[in-house]
Length: 457
Image (cartoon, rainbow, N blue to C red; front, side):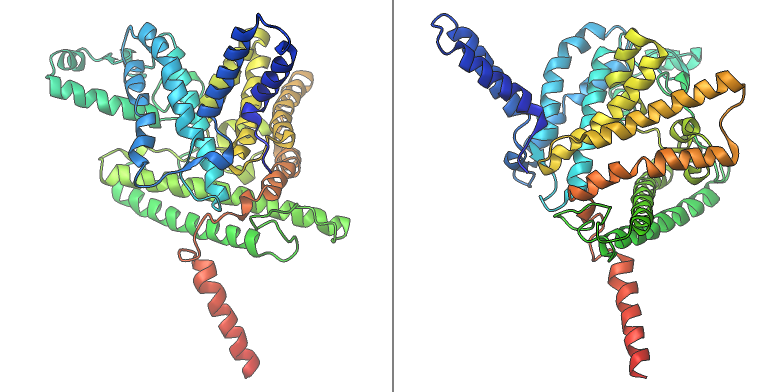
């Protein structure tokens, strides 16, 4: 399907303005400007089939587009840099937009990874806007101002450090603020209401923590592999695990069976997401603790008890990952907060989440889907309903009925979101190649051989 939401509006406007102005001899300049704007948009966000595949020949060119983000990250960690950051913002944002949309890191058939690339790219663009616009920069909770420690002795060391040491500290500051997307230890995360899941690993013993993290990595890998295999090879709903796509709700099944299968497949998609993200996060944590010398406390869990949540509020703010929290708040949360207060912050954050997940369908040449948007706005309405319930009754949502409530909103209400991914072929991509899949490469063939041997006997 060759329909692109990003430049469709500008192209529509250009065509209509062109027709309207075609009989006027004095509006050539306006006509030319509109045409120029459309060409600029198409340069920054080309049609999906015109995206360039990243290869070893153009990889450097692709990476250079994102390079100005590092100086912007450096400046946001320094005092009195607001004006220069805002001056850089349009230039850096344009380059980041082309970095995200004009190049494809994975082949066309890798629909899942192409979707993930766009989601991550949109978050990088949001980080770019945040770094450029925030008035006072970003400071750690141990600092008086960005780059100025509270500890007088450390502040004196920083003030008298050599040029090479200052450069090293600036580089590490840039990388840390760029990748510390949850804001752990910073004013925009821990200092502004970020809730972290309960730590389940040993914090004081590095050896035990490393052993536990390795076990978590293996466990996440096996569960993700199993859930991915089930989605791709399940026989009840054809097309879901293929690149051509198919709906979660097969019309060939009776209504009850159809609902049960759709619910199970949606749950499997959720497990793929949680185990896949945890696998990447734990791997980075293990590398950082062993190689970079980080403390285990710097890597709190990514997810809480997602299946044990008893309210939508606790599910979204504590049990689900908070990696995109600042992205969503920056994109729509803060702008709507200026109009509607706390209600605007909530609606804007959920709206931004829906827009990011919807617009990422561009990766497969598809327009954004309103079903995804509805699901994330449903979460906002659920949180509003919980707050209203607390005001009316004086009690918080929780317990058994709270778990049923979360199941209805997330597991039942979220099926339309998974259905969009299934129909668009995103679930048909290879998250794990067959060569790396323990289930598909080893367990299933060995099981089939065993069953064949039993039949022979």
